[in-house]
Length: 326
Image 1 (cartoon, rainbow, N blue to C red):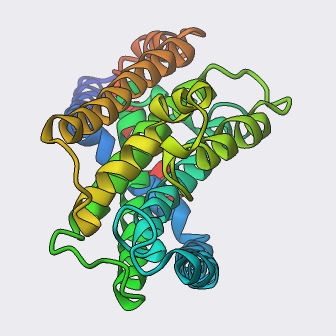
Image 2: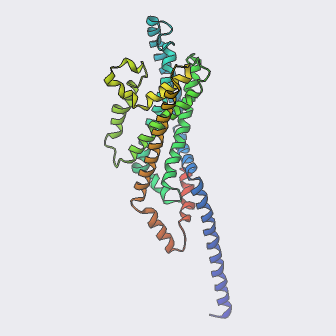
Image 3: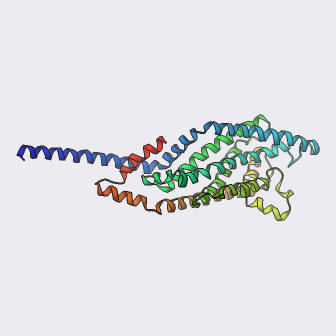
């Protein structure tokens, strides 16, 4: 090889090293951005998935509001008010008594849908969580992104429900809008626990269906939703006391129509719901981290990249755009 050929080869090698260095530097910047905004990337991914069934989301939110408010709040309420008067329950009409409970129940319904099978999907049936974890996105950010996206859908559902409550004249209090936030907290407090439980399942052999039948349905019936909790025998009232739906319903009624209640009890309702949310959220984050990192996929990916003179950051460049486009 002549001296000229050697110089050309050296220059070409230097150019290749320069391009590789620039690519790695860009990958490092992208990885840092992904680590910082990973939760929002996951939320964006979930929003794109929800867009595929957006019509179902809107139809369910509008249809359920109309059906429940008309059937229970107008149909059944006419019988209750006809026999007991306009101040049938707690000094208000049955519609005004029932509507805040239905509002909180709508948030529970969204939680039972979004925090169950989609979580199982991400772990088992279409394991996108493992792909996310192979990038710079952390397991905790996956859970955060899911909570953000579900909270947005839950807020939309509750807002639509509250509009129909106003149309039906079921919100006489001036702070009725606050009941929407209470319903949101109620749904998230239950949903976080359900999400954590779903993260423990290796296979679905009917467990989630059992939750629907033996947890959500009894919780709806025995949480003071359709009648005051104190109507039940004392030995059954504890079912309502431990239920997030009962605490959310009671607090929603305080804001919806000014239900008389000691301030300490309202604070207790809010603290109980916040505690359930925190416990479920932290539990879900830890379970997800343990499950995704159990196989050591992230470590093996890093070692493989290191052998090729690259870094883990390159994974985020290749995986994150694909995840966002899914």
